[in-house]
Image (cartoon, rainbow, N blue to C red; front, side, top):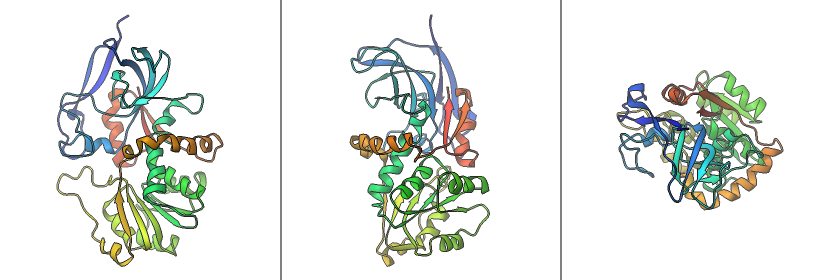
Length: 333
């Protein structure tokens, strides 16, 4: 029986917030894999802020998605047919499969996963790129030490929620910034953060001073903009700022807001460093070995917001920027 594919195609470069007109839903036949390829049935698609940057025709750490191409995205799925010796029919895999029902892909960057260890969608969150980002960003770039204080923005998201938990597991204090009382309660009561700051309702500067009385040793930034400026004023001596993302700026069509208080780095002898998780690809096994058992023992917790249907890509994706989600945002194919 001939399978029919559903693909989300980039039709034009978005200006500001992503709109339905920026994409085309394309349906058509599915081709059999060629030598060295596999055919994967996509089950869950990861929705990440970085995807907004991939839609821009600007230099970045990866080429932009081309007009007329399937929207790039991480995903998990099941191998339906294989013409590569390392993968067999029935294997579960994760990789950049794109926003599509079926993906005929080369095996470069494709990884086999164990559905017995964790639910498949977890390989897009706590055991996927967000978890890896948290692990290497906090421990390598942030050079966390026991007894220090970690402040993380976007703390209720897929990356930030893991950052705070890893900080606690490594003997540090964790303070999260999130939007709304429900998310703040989740951070403290479910994930074990020491404190949470509601940027929508509270005086963030005053609350950082109150919750981080000995200042901030590591600021893990997922948001940028005003929150980064405020955090810099509370940086401890030789503090580190980890630039993971700047979600507050991704839809800014004018000019990105940079750090106005960067001189705090001089005064406090601090360091600000950006990173991309792909730089650590050769060490992913280390992170899996460290976090997998913690997840199995219940020491690492996670939440997901799952939206059904590839045709709902645009409204689901925009929830990243409106905050209408908790934990990892996933699209179920």
